[in-house]
Image (tube, rainbow, N blue to C red; front, side, top):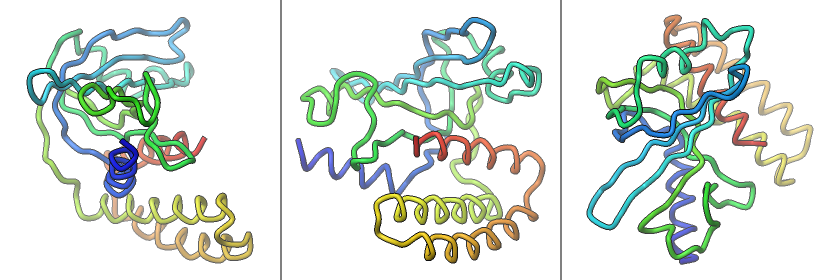
Length: 199
């Protein structure tokens, strides 16, 4: 079980963003005052196995009309087949974040329930890859997150953090200028999910 948890974390940490996965949505719930929407996406790869993604998407009430995920979900009903992008959340001790149970639980192989940050969702299958420009911008952002993590774990000094981060920030800004508005919005959702994962 320890090896499984270790290998799973390494896979999730290296892949980071999962694109165009398919599942069934259920338990869509809107919190009071529309500050968040919660739902579960499930996938059954075979008999006696089920993978569940528990999603909580936080919404700024002042920008409800423009919130991409909120507006996408308005047209989706429970038990619909959905195609989604997102990030399996992780813990600072290099394990994945389960909604039920904890690392080492026997049910984590047949019935895992992951905490998941949703980036995109709809009822139509999309491409399994992002544009080169968007992927470059996301890669730059991932490198910036990695540098923050190295500093957090005392593997690099504050001085080195600033130096490396400044260089990466320049590369990120350059990559971002090549994006369409739709790609920039997608990137912003990825960044928010990554920042949430640091907390």
